[in-house]
Image 1 (tube, rainbow, N blue to C red):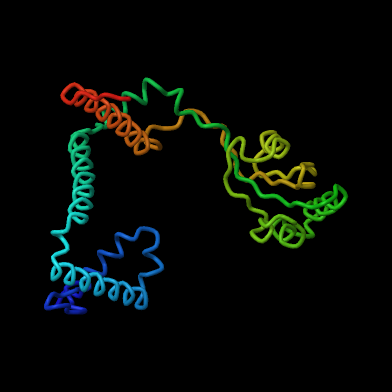
Image 2 (image 1 turned 120 degrees about the horizontal axis):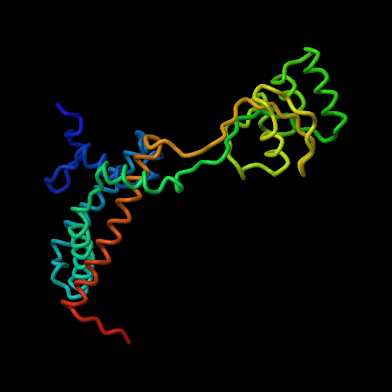
Length: 249
């Protein structure tokens, strides 16, 4: 038996299944993770049972005939219908790879990446302390990673000083300028910033330049599709304003 079809409860003769609970979870977005466990699913089941009970009570009392409900229902229906019409107006908007390739070739100046770095550092309070640590690293008394773990005041010290990858403008100017001037694999002299004194080891450096088409194809096609959808939306609105005149006061 398919577990999703497993009946978890019967309310007035109507079944609530595992699939009903799963579908409710899927509609919860980011909150779903905290409910996707036995306790959370049990809570959702109780909510579905309560909702079914209220529905049956509403049907028994003929609430749907009440003017207040009809007004509320019509508002929801109109919102759904307007949303559906918007979806229909945009459903045929597509971007081909040929269009994306053409746009890329004609606008390469928009796809330029700046210089990127991968670096590790050791941050201490004084230049003297930084110089002493650098001397120990140079004479082989300690590795850069161990020195970072033992001395760095930056949280990255617990990762051997690794800062990972970063691009231009993401670090303070003095730090970035030092990285730009260094050769890969070397360790800097103490570099002063507002945070203290850094010993920087440059692990990798890329000069940047025009991004390859394959790197940005997916993002570019999404961007072009959004632009086409916006244009199609505005065109449809303009057409509808001719059919149904709008007077603004």
